[in-house]
Image (cartoon, rainbow, N blue to C red; front, side, top):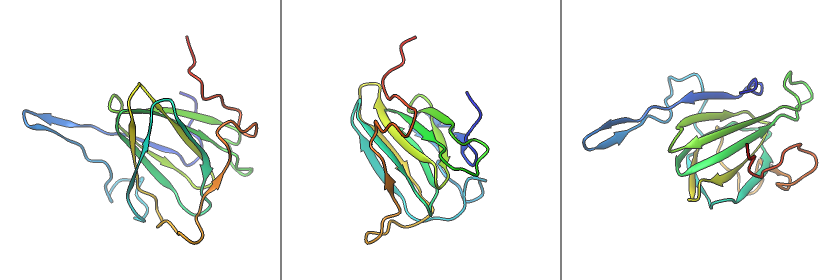
Length: 154
């Protein structure tokens, strides 16, 4: 993988199975990714659907894909960042559990992959403000971000 975008953090998550099922810690206040708690929500993405692009000015996001698989893509537009212009791709979900910290001002989006609905849990550092949402959007196919969401055949 390319160098991570400045401020992005990835933590491999490890399910602990036994004969009854499995348990997996997703987010702990003693992990370096933790800053503060805003809220917890889940978002669903149907197969081959792209949800993106957007960024936040005030909050960091913390994504975990719990069901299905998702391709999560980040783009760094920040003028003062050493990784300005860089793209990161993450294939996360049932076959690759991880916690992905997405810093403020970094565009992000995701696509449901693998033929089933993907469920992504997010733990942003701030509450959602219904009156003045901290969300700034671009279309998934904007020419401002050099990324093609299509499958890359190899």
